[in-house]
Amino acid sequence: MRGARERRVRVLVHLTELSELPLGGLPEPAFKERLRAELMSGALATAEPEAPEERAAGRPQPLLGGRGRRRRSRGRPLLSQLATVGLVAALMVSSFATYRAVPGDSLYPLKRAAETTLVHLTSDDAERAARELDSAKARAKEVATLLGSSVDGPLVDETLKDMEESTRAGISRLERAEPRSPKIKKFARDQKEAVKPMLQQLDEDQLAQAEGYLSYIEGLAAPE
Image (cartoon, rainbow, N blue to C red; front, side):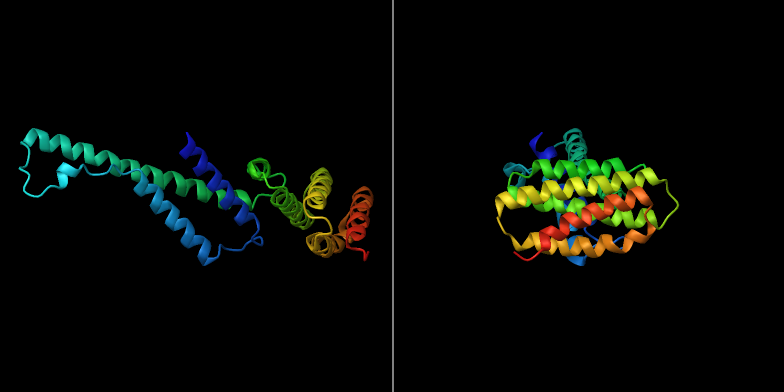
């Protein structure tokens, strides 16, 4: 049970790393090498160790019946390895598709569930705040994507609301963990640059919501 839980956590961590890529981007070579290493280590971990007596030199071979049973028993670890690699590979392919999902896509709830799980699995307040703020940045990118497509207004409204909720939760937690952290001002500047170009594409209600958000984050970046 513990090993399965750790594997699920690693997949969720990879999904978070993928979500930080620009839309349409590809993973860095270091990420792919780390993934390949984890796939191989997961496969090798399922292999049954060879008994010491089987490695002893000069041991006589068993009869045909015993040899047949030995071959069949050795085949099971190989199948287990292939199944492990296949499962993890399938999860990672799904992760690539999930991280690209935007509101309205069938995989979008999975993306949000993964983000929420990673936040809740984080016990360190500063790290948890960083994940909340990363979620706010992701929502800003999703709003920009939605505005560039033909979608219903409610999706934009809901995403703007989620962006503000994640921002306030992350800032509140970061202020407690690291008072006067320079990360707050940097986040505010980055979000302002991301949200301000959208204003001309928003309707009246969305504009009021976005302007209220900008007013909030501009206060965070204001000189003390």
